[in-house]
Image 1 (cartoon, rainbow, N blue to C red):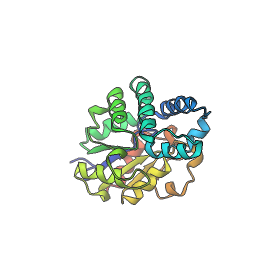
Image 2 (tube, rainbow, N blue to C red):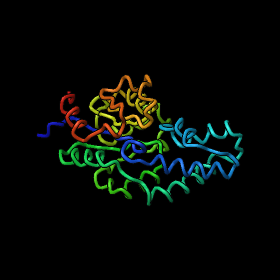
Image 3 (cartoon, rainbow, N blue to C red):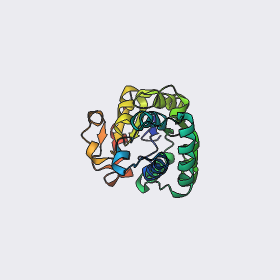
Image 4 (cartoon, rainbow, N blue to C red):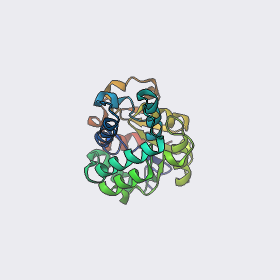
Length: 228
């Protein structure tokens, strides 16, 4: 029997499994430039972990964009998918971790604020779809993170009790969503300055150094020690 018997693992996608934030930023920068708005990497950081749909709503209000949100979503997804298919990198230690869990038969899922099309493009483009066959988009549930909906739906599809699920997250809204879902969380902050966010304080394991600190073995050993 696997040492991780009874545990299910749910991964956030962007900034956790893959370094897709540069692609989101570039797609966002190009879209906003067409509306005469200069958008910097620093501007982008405040939207890490928030669903695309909600981000667009904030932009409409903040920048006075009158185009329908659905149209903006289509434009942004089109730009993003072009980049995602060819230029998304899976974090090497995360790939190792997924392979390690797959080898032990641990049920796994992805729960992301990205669109289903973006999730599919990234998972297939990186080859992670060989291991991660269950994926939930915030587009498929009532509320995006920090609401628990995506994680609860992922657990439902895995046939897992939320209390037996461990979430890997890089953003404060995702850590809050995991807590609201009654799941434990391994937090790997994408934005180092946010490591002290109160949402991360409730994580079972907080790797303040982000991906530079994360290793497959560290995460695996923590799961073994905290499986009950």
